[in-house]
Amino acid sequence: MTTLYLCSKLETLCGILGIWAKNKNGKSEVGKTKDVIARLAHRGPDFQGSKTHSNFSMAHSRLSILDTSAAAHQPFSDENERYFLSFNGEIYNFKSLRQKLEREGVQFKTNSDTEVLLHHLILYGEEGLKELNGCFAFIFYDKKEEKVLFARDRMGIKPLLIYEDDNKIILTSELHALFDFDIEKTLDEEAIRLYFRLTYIPAPKTILKNAFKVLPGQLGVIDSQGINLKKYYRIERKPFYRNGVGKAARALNEKLTQAVEKRLVADVPLGTFLSGGVDSSVISAIAKKLKPDLKTFSVGFDHPYFDESTYSRMVAEHIGSDHHEFTIGKKDFKDSFPDFLNALDEPFADSSAFAVYFLAQRTKKEVSVALSGDGADELFAGYRKHLAEYRLRRMSNTKKSLISISSKILGNKRVSRSDKIGDFNRKLQKLNRGIKLDNESRFWEWCCFIEEEEADRLLKPAYHIKTGWKGNNLDEINDMLIADQQLVLPNDMLKKVDAMSMAHGLEVRTPFLDHEVVEFANGLPLEYKLNGKQSKQLLKIAFSEELPGEILDRSKKGFEIPIQEWLQDEIQEMLQSRLFQKEFIVEQGIFNFEYIASLIRSSSSKGFGDRIYVLWSILIFQHWYGRYYG
Image 1 (cartoon, one colour):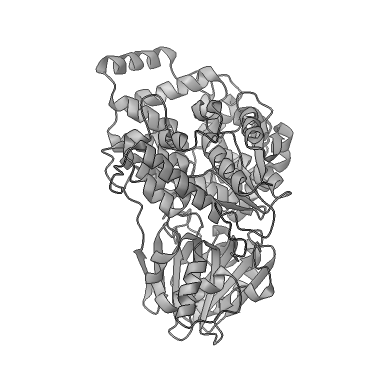
Image 2 (cartoon, one colour):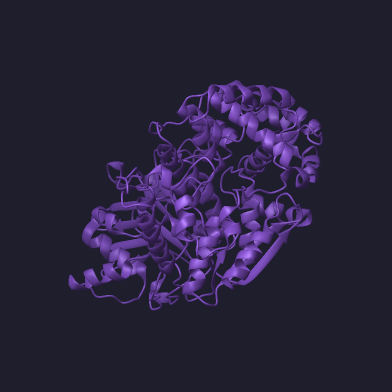
């Protein structure tokens, strides 16, 4: 019988900020943190606090979920005020860590995991990171030694960024907090190129040359010598599990149930996101067993090709949850679009972010914590590209030739994500291009939303920078899953969920990314995950008794919005905006104005296809640029 740890006192999603002065000029800005933390108030609307020392200042913006008393406010310090902590996240095994610390003589004044983390770091330092089970980003300051320790969790669930120049080092949860300091605002050409291929900027890059993202599983120390970075955890292949599919399925069920259980601790209303796909359905089914009054939340569309609400209702009825369904239409898009744009701290053009924004906005009215199914696709080969890769590696030359001929016949004119025929041809064209590439190049191209030639036409020559996969060799498909966990998961999926949920002060927890589940999945043979017909095999076997067969057997459909139909009014408004006038774009020096003008002119044509994502990416970029540079 599973028992919930209802007495636990976890901290939660927040905003953190710190500034280290290198010299006298830097010290003049140390006092700004008290005001700048207001930039992160959406991440923690319940309390903002700061602490200033001679050459270092730190601040915290708190969203209270458990132990909501003032005693747990941050920055948090020990009783002697030597050590200070600003912490974003949750330590799920803090109870066992606390017991260990109490045996060492530590006495606690709160029931929060923040205080446990503080004393754990005091006693064990950076070596203590290996014992943490949780999602976190933190700044830990030793006033006596004048030294800062900072770190980000293993999978990159929580964000942490660093800016450095000759005078100071700034740490922050979100990039836009930097603009309230005196910073060098030079844009990074390679980051812009990456954005206009992937639709996001992968770590360690940011849009600014002098700023970078801390990598998942990375820690750093700041002292008089500067910044010293190192990895304390690496996502990697594990030795294969060899005890058979049946035992593996039971083990996965047990590990994921435990991961969900850890994340059901809250003194505020809690629910789950339920899209009707396998991943969120599994999490919701487990959560309903552990929490009988579970609320589930889904978003649908007034466009039949994108709407999957039928499946989420089916799961909700099957598990018996209190289901809440929200439908997005074009008017909702138009009304929320400006606020959605302002929720982005740097250019980020995954269009499904708007659906997450809307879902988080409506969900927050009912609960303050939601569990999601993020991470399962990267662990268990759930993307359509994984199935395509599996088939391609086993494909005969004859079939490859037929694909090449078919792609030429259909051509690129009828490519779209808005209907079945256009989407089929889009996949066919992408598969045909992938056939001609090596493993690493194919992986990269299949991660990209915008073709290289399209990016070349859009951007000035200074931005024609060759990009590609820079990680491990991708000899096996399991290697590609690791690559997805390193590239797509933290930089696209988790970034999207963090930014969109925190725009509304909603905490999202991700059971699939418990590092024990991740390590188990990364030790499974490929045949446990994928064959020529379906993906996520072991996950489906492990929960076959909890969910309807229709949910387990349905094919993967991406979480996307009807962007071409919804964006038409905004495209027309572009023509009137200063940010899209020729004089502005020429002075900006990034884009070819003639190509943007031609895109806008042809945007309403039937053959416009996937180029709508180019326009979407430009619109996102120009709005961001206008806020901070225009």
